[in-house]
Length: 507
Image (cartoon, rainbow, N blue to C red):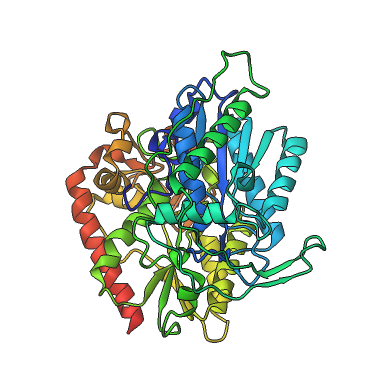
């Protein structure tokens, strides 16, 4: 799996890998099920990385989806990694209203794309109630057909009271190809029989090497595949039934591919033992899932953020104290919402996500934070929020901006700011299989020779615009100018400039 992929998911069923017009043209929307994975970060007492839920949940989901496709139409969204995190053993969470809002905002975008069936696949024991609330409200208020599968129902037990925790630990150990860390933190559980109980730290799970991890993964895969088929058939038009046939668990990959700097890949103990946190730099990637013309995938912005890091970080010393926070994948993309497949959250939700992430990082002892934003629509909200945070004592926070300017013709440099030469060239270097150059077009929102000074961007007088005001294809630039050769050169030079800036922040 390439290092810039957004999740451990099959490319053939990933929402973010499709162009907007591919989703708009689908004829199976009424029966297709869109799946939103919801994963939390926690020390579940199993000696596993904090992202154990995603490690196991995404692997089983990927295998189940591959087992029933293409007979049962399914699309998988990038995972939502931010939910409520109410206890000391949970991390990178947010307040309940924001968690509920982001679930609802993603769902409304799915409905706007013409897909009426949405499944929440939830691995977090502490987000089950929020997901259930969102599903019901969306059914009643938005008319969506909503479904919930909690991981515990297919044998993936992360709740401290679940009887399958040892089996879940064995599955994770299989995927990680290593034994869990057995230096667990002492339990802190109070009033477990007094709903909802207090689970400050779950009881440690002793690793049982006799458990058959691959067999357990296969069983969970087949259970999930059967449930997905039922959901596809539910409230759908008449169609031949699809029967779930037993499928072996498919080989899977961990996300992200490079886990050495990703904070979610640390165990709780390793996270707490990071030395000299006040000097370290934590980077928060912020992207978007939005249309990028007929020729680029919806996940372009978020993928490019991962691409920059994959190329810039190796240019630092191996011991450089630089870490990556869980990414903000869903951004504020309201201007693109007329195009199928765009997922947008509100300004308030984006702001709340950043505030919650920064508060968590501060609580962990980090004092230097940088936001790497790859979607222009996020910028105003992020800059305003960062200005608020800059007043916090003992916190240095800012934006990692473009420290490199590619050589382009004046027209493209001025008005080629979306899905044009730059982004298309970069995507040709990292995901050529997702780029359809035969569908690339040239379409500008304005021209340098236009009379007057009123422009959509970069002028003394600008007008508020949505993409459909200025572009039929969704492109704002000349994608036909893109080449892989330009992309490789620009990627190398720009990632070098980014690495130099990061290095300077550590001085």
